[in-house]
Image 1: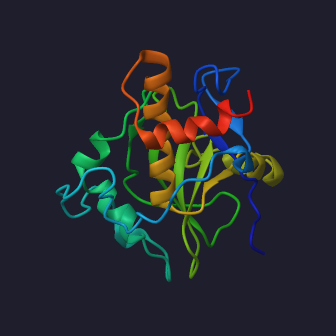
Image 2 (image 1 turned 180 degrees about the horizontal axis):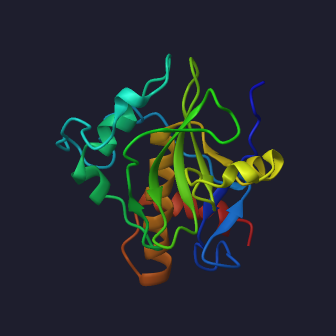
Image 3 (image 1 turned 90 degrees about the vertical axis):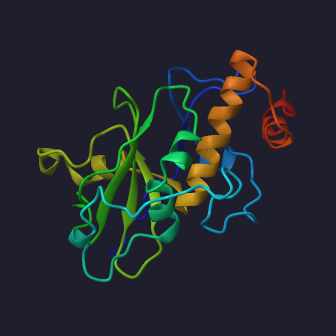
Length: 206
């Protein structure tokens, strides 16, 4: 049976417009601003036009299960240092591609590929791959590939695996936008029209 993971976005504060109790807060997906996805074509030209990339050599793609494939936008982004370097992080997150996929701890036919982690492992992000289905992004405060999770009950595991985005490029865009906005509202960095529109979703309600 396909698991219906809880939805959520592990994000930071956005200044006075959106508060956070700790370094991260789990915000309901429906509370987030809607973004324009018309530019999402897998090239990430909205981030760095013409960014060079190399073949994805750091990961054992042969370990992917039958009828499971990495999406093209994931392979392009994770094989381009230029694209990865273009993403700021106000919490010290790093793109950290796992050397090989691992089975989902709650759905043996599915696989996880870690690609991003907080510097203190407060939150770790994974590409979630199901046979014959569209991949999506999940986030967890737990390192899901470690030995020992088999001793945790299934409901607790699922509760700590939130569905953060329906697609990889959608996730990268929001992560980039929110972190850029954090530096704008907290450090005085220059803002863009897109960032101001995103922030207006929150300030309009204040």
